[in-house]
Length: 236
Image (cartoon, rainbow, N blue to C red; front, side):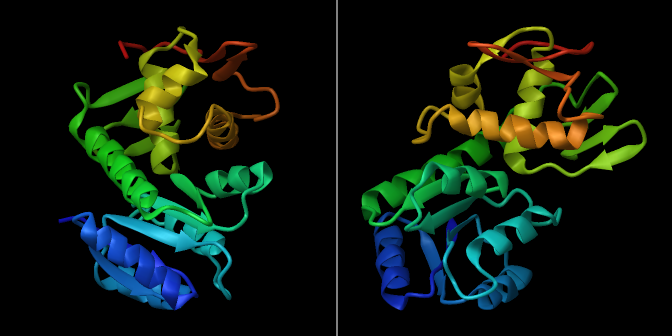
């Protein structure tokens, strides 16, 4: 039974979400502030986290960014729960490392479906892998240890950034459409749009390119999608 931590400063929302998740077959624990959540994670890591953005400090966005910066928690799926539904807010949440974005008001069945989707994507990622390493353009990716190096320097990536880099490097020289990347990295159940891909590519460029403003490795093919330029490659 997957364990989901639910965090919101409104206890009634925590209880509603937790009740719905339990009914859907999940184990849950609820927290009404970020510090309590972080303390719980230090003792037992959950399979997924539902995290309210607009909490008293530390808010959900700060916690999300913090968890993504630590190797032990970098791959825990995070779903941001918020009343902020503007596109710019969704982009910011994804840039900070969220795997999905749920806007209030929400349906509990939708929340359960989204949690199942992110868990399935994480499980599928852990099961795939035929090759242990991929290299190209000065980048070395170790699939088993989930590490990335550029030369002698290690690069910290979020789970989605890692998956995106792997599929692009496996298909080096091939142009992959945004829809193809969505299906293979986020899964066909994903509720978002292709803007998600653009956000993650931009963030990935900031980490692996010498100059993110003039990318040499992750190139945009206007009106189509993206391709990785470097010796590497395989199949989708």
